[in-house]
Length: 503
Image (cartoon, rainbow, N blue to C red; front, side, top):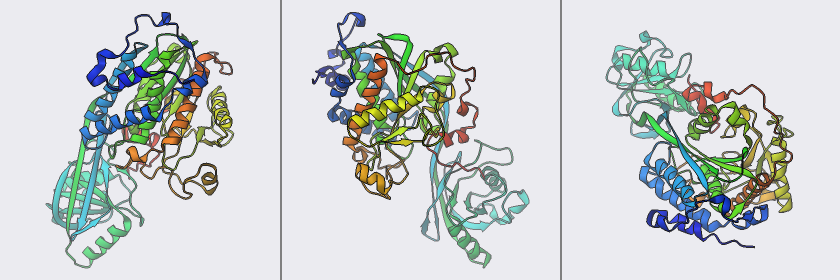
């Protein structure tokens, strides 16, 4: 049975025809169709998924190709989601707005006219400096390591012993115009931070990193008496931004037994984030726009999280600000982050811990099996993925809420066995555009996205109808969310899994 969803098309055109969308005065009196997994799955269409994705791409153009939190593009994404949900009249919606530190940038370095691969350090200031390189003594951890000749020039500093931030501030104290920190191993520095927005020992100067191989070569040339003309160009922003979660709860259903589904609305600064996590956000948005067709027993809540890419900021803020009583009303949490990777796998979070020995709260095993049963019914092979804490399920796990969800892979490589199961290319990243500018419409595997959206529909419909198999006893008193106590840069270990080094 294919259900009419014409109101969704109206909602998609809300900017020009918002008044045409249906308004509901009393959702309890609508005479809705009883919800079932099959009926909700039958409403899923690649056409509407892609229509939302195109809107997200349009929004990204407002901010130079990104939807990073607090940007104009991200604010447009948030406004779009809330407007569509409000048009249905089916939800109580709210914006949960708060302030958080945004720090993002890029660094470009050249030496004697040759461009070198470089990375920016979190909190590093902007600047465009052309000057000669001056080699700093030792490891640049003491003011005496900086010769007078560094004034007005670019300090070349080797990694080691002390923090990047101290080296950069000491370079500023010595009146250097910029600094380059090179690795103490041949490879590059895979992400780094100055550790704090400022330091008392001196002002930060524009700074970027180089690989140990490039840095050693430059240092050797300087030691041999050579002169190296270099350029350090840094484009960076460090500022406090206001940003918002969107929370939407159905007006019908038992509010003491809430089925919660979530995904994050922000992208990394480097790209538009149409797979990460436009795909997950759109999956739950599209299903949220279908639910007004149905009636069901348990309330359904959708969380559209901000600033996940900066360390699960939105979901942590939400969970931390819930009372224990309100936390206990959430029966299950279902997470959808990257569900349309181009070289995809059908991964299910390992709720029972059988594959990775990290067991979720009681009931997480049931969620895992619910997804497994869906794929078995479709004669599709699925595989477990680790509860690594890398997405917005983390804060829910920390307070004992049964959790699960789907994932199609990020920077990992598809195995030969997985290529046999799902097609695609072995020994190639699941998402070659992960956290890159190319994460756009063409980065989506649409058939996999549709399949995962139907799997999401199955899980939401299953638990909206019945919570059989999900424990509803009071949870433990340990309600601390791990990332809440971490520093700004430490949190970023919990968003994308990259190492953020400070020394």
